[in-house]
Each structure stands twice: as C-alpha cells, then as structure tokens.
Length: 344
Image (cartoon, rainbow, N blue to C red; front, side, top):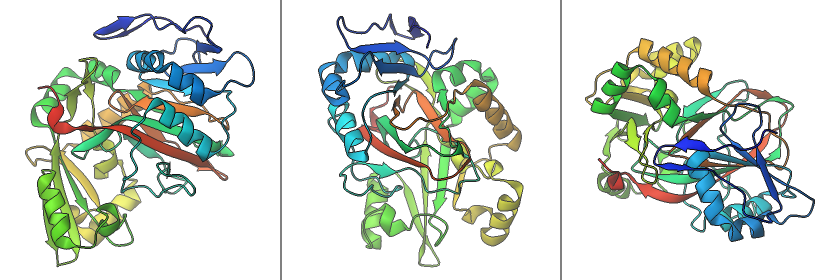
C-alpha cells in the first residue's frame, strides 16, 4: 500500500499521522488514491475495539480529511465483533432504522439493503432524503461474494467541485422534493418503516418531521419531503453534493422496469421519485450526466472477509455493484444529525 499523504479537506488542512508507538500502519488500496485511508495492524493480535476507543481523535481527524476509512487485517470476524468496534468509535449507534432489517443477536446492527443481486444499488448518502440522517456509517464484511459486490465510494466534495457550475447552481437553488409511495410488495410496508400501525400517529410523525403525507385510496401512504441537494458540512465547512437523487429518479431504473412500473402505478404513484424542490421534473439528461460523473470519480475495491469501512456519510456516498454467490455485509449508523441544524 502507498504511504498516507496530507489531504486538503477544506478548512481541515493537516497531515494525518498515526499516534507514536501505535500498532497501526496507514496507506491506500491503490497508488494515487486519497480515500479510503487503509488502517492495518503491524502485528497479529491488535484489539481494534480497544485501540479505536483510545485513539478516537486520530480516527475522527482522519475521517474528516479522507471521508472514508478501511480497517483491514484485524481479527474481527462476526457482527458482534463489528458492533463492539463501531460502538467504541461512535457511542450513539442508531437502533431505530426503518428501512433495513436487524441482524440477529445484535442491538444496533442491520443487514445491508435486500436488493436483487444482479442489479446495482446506485449512489446515495444514507437517509439524506429524510429530516435526520447518520453522520457516521459503518460496513462490515462477514462474507464477500464470489464475484462483484463491491461497495463503490464517492467523495461528494469532489462531485461538487467537478460538476458543471450551472447544474450545481440549479440543484443548490431549487433543492429537491422526494416522493415515496409505500406500495405493497414493492417496498418496506409503511407500518414497519414508521414502527406503528396507527395512521394518525404516522401523520403526526410526518408533520413534525416536515413531511407531507397523504393516504391514496385509504391504504397506500404517499409522503413528500423537501430537502437539500447541496449542503455545507457542519465540521469542515465544505460544500458537498449530498442527496439520494439516483436512488429515487426513474431514469436510473432499467428500461423494462421503468416501463412496467409506470404502466402499473403511473408516474405519480411510483414507489420512489424525486423532483426539483419546486416540483419540476429533473431532466433525464441531467441524470445521465450525474451517472457519468459518479462512476468516473468513485473508488471501488473487492471486499475481504473482516473488512470494516467507516464513512462520514455527509462526505461520502456509496453504492453496490451486482454480485454472484453468497454475500453478507452488515451495517451500523450513528451520530444522528437534524437537517434544521445545517448552516445556511
């Protein structure tokens, strides 16, 4: 691996060096990379949970500079090991996430998104379409797939810098409006997402969160959430392209799926959709340009069993490539952030 270098992270500008006497070495997966920063033990037997608890300031500084850390070569093997390590770095792991199923025998660990193995999950910042999201996100590889299955990472600071200025300005000015229809057998049921079967309680939660809610034909829940497309990072002050536009826009579905869903639900009833914040359509050509930029600038490497990736979810978006064979990646999230606390 290459030796870690000083990284320009906006207002946070300093060389990230391992604490003296540390049993950890740093580097990168490939020459020329600036993320993820790879941390590996210099000898067998390093207790990662204990080391992380003692060296949180170093870890947080490295995360602010690089956006993503890859802990590789440690003795972690199980989701319980993962929960202990993630908890030693982030004391307030989130245990009430409605979009993912819990991992057995753990309190705050989730399965990764259950999505067909032959299709990609496109780039997104976790929960950026909601009023609250995790600042920190962790992934742990219990079993890598036979082929594919990488988790591409994308620095959203870089995306903000390289996108066409007029395009960025339009997203920044208008923001986004996410629309979600909780269609039976297509998405997670609304009562599982909101953790209640009481429709009035769902309406109350939505109102308090700044979401519009509507019951279609008395049983299908439609919610609308306005949010930012570009934000200023609360720690570094950098602007980042922070959203879930790819996960929600129908352009990103394959042609056959898009055609069948529109025929079945019409555009206004699609399970997920996204518009500019004023309700106007985001052009297919704009989505094509985003797709080109995202894949051009992302980093992706094969998983190894025991790999642990830590992200600053407000700096790095992630995706998932198609795969074959069994694959098990588990997830943790923490340090929840409220959109109303964003700097203007």
